[in-house]
Amino acid sequence: MDSPLIVRPALPADLPQLLALYPHLDSTDRIPSLDVAERRLDDLQRYHGSAIFIGIIDDATVASCTLIVIPNLTRGGQPYGLIENVVTHAAFRGRGYGKQLLHAAVAAAWQADCYKVMLMTGSKQPSTLAFYASAGFEQNKTGFQIRRLPPRADAVD
Image (tube, rainbow, N blue to C red):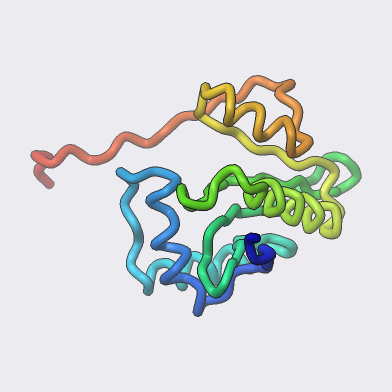
């Protein structure tokens, strides 16, 4: 039987394990230094209600998601939530841990008086889309994004 998942906001001491988890989200992504990660966590925590939620089993961080609570001037001034960076360690998938983290993030968003919570995924995998639907999210909007191009390696100042 699996140990129960402990879900809580990440603390600076959790960052080494959290950074080690992120390659399970995107193995090609650059991982920031611990100093940069500490500054970014501090920045994130300045937004009331925002947090990086981690799921811990036997002292190991096995899942995570980020909730950003965004101040708003519509909807009577109610903020909205954005969930990003949903990841579960490959060895721990299929056990409901990701769904537990999403439910914790949504509960925190409601506690922060958000009127809605959004997330986007670039995945077209039916299993990923079914996972988000099973966690209570509806696929009912069209998302758009624009990404900054990385600087060219041969660019000269």
